[in-house]
Image (cartoon, rainbow, N blue to C red):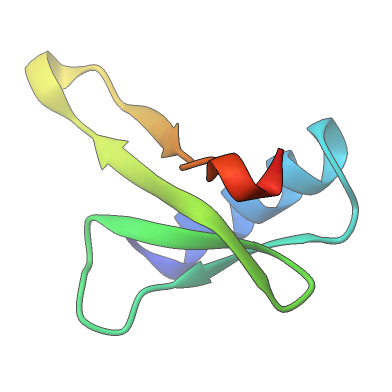
Length: 67
């Protein structure tokens, strides 16, 4: 993802969910970014640009031990 996309997603996650959330670039991937709350990894947001419609998909695994 481009840095300006990551900034927009970061602002969105902060505004919609939690000001402590942060969206960061992934080291070896350019189609997605990582989402954190503080130092804790939450999930990955993927860029989906199929059929000319741009959207973003957030994927978060929830472990049973965390419930």
